[in-house]
Image 1 (cartoon, rainbow, N blue to C red):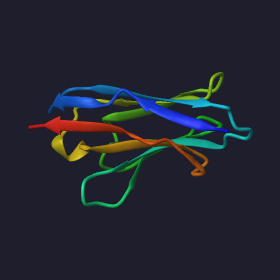
Image 2 (image 1 turned 30 degrees about the vertical axis):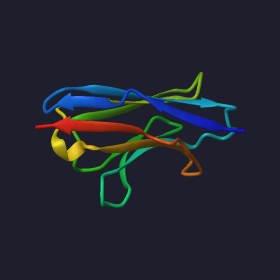
Image 3 (image 1 turned 120 degrees about the vertical axis):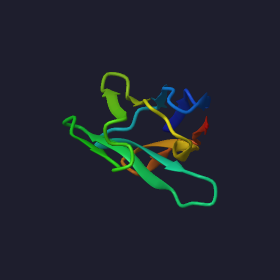
Image 4 (image 1 turned 90 degrees about the vertical axis):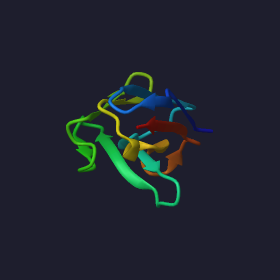
Length: 112
């Protein structure tokens, strides 16, 4: 059974950086895409960034230039480097494989 486990969240001040990791156990076949989504309090879940099997990336406009997604194909791990964090980035960040498997999320809180 595939399980995704996120780590790296925390409480930081505005302007700080965090690096999120998502490790997959029971690796699924055909990993077409890996990605990060987030859900802020009282809001719907939204796309943050995705990366496909060829390494092509896609970012939400709100994080372009600040966040970088990367993946380690050898072990099925996806990362999210987050720089210049703002309070608007406060959310629970969840990783996904193929929009089918989802982790439980890691909380990121950015104070002003």
